[in-house]
Amino acid sequence: GPESAGAEAMAPTLFVAAKRGNTLSKVDLATGKEVLRLPSCTNPHELATSPDGQHVALACYGGTSVDIFRTDSLERVASIDLGANASPHGIVWHASGDLYATAEGRRSIFWLRNPLGETREVFEFGTGKDGSHMLAVSPDARTAWTTDLGSRTVTRVDLRTRRAPLSVTVGEEPEGISLSPDGSTLWVSARGSNQAFALDPRTMEVRQAVATGRFPLRIAVRPQGDVALTSDLQDGSLSVIDTATAKVIRTIAVSGPAEAQTRFQVTILWSDDGKRIYVAETASDTVAEVDYVSG
Image 1 (cartoon, helix red, strand yellow):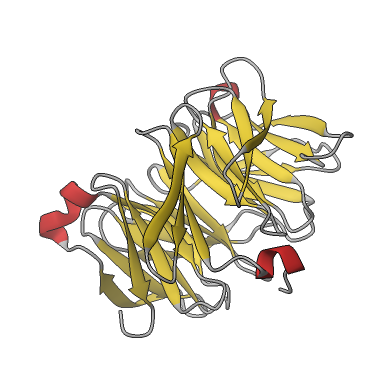
Image 2 (cartoon, one colour):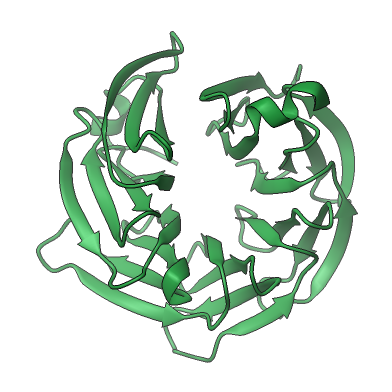
């Protein structure tokens, strides 16, 4: 969608959380060069940029807070504590301006309303499941979904009416989660059973199951909605799933099976125009930039 003047002023930029280095980095995508790296927080696993491009939020998995930094200087401007044992992991900065994060150690998710304002409000919603790891939030911000690694479930959480959460068992070790842009399909990847699943986001029924590459850690629907990708950690490749037919239509090799364990690809990020894919290779401290059309 349209971005604010502030976001337009910044050249295309990638932000990287280093979970072992405890740092936050900024990469200029025109040159591929890391232009700034600063200490961040303990063991940050996931991050999210604000809709206006002015801030980036880190889920500090080794601690209990969500920390917010300016995108220009990487200066920390807020640290929002989620309470004892929180271990925040998955994080979404919603188009509404609000932040959402899982708190694995509390078996819950948090809604941080107006996170940078003086009237910030913090709401916690229990999932009642182990390892609520990654999350997705609906376009209308009424519903969130988590993958609960330890419980082998996917949980739907109502953020407005406080209805009881609804959990369903999906494959083995569901971890990746991505909502289609129109909110009509919830995609989940289960790393333990080498599968991706298309779920009805409302009823939580599984519509389709798809065999993917080995150990699909993450899944990401292209902003255009036509395909979903899984990052297949043991193959060093990406499975491209046609969302209309729920079939794998291509495999994109990123590092290949021989290098898979020395690269350990995890997070996938699409460029807004759907032309580029960024794959975090955790073991080699690299990010692979992939041209989607040519692979």
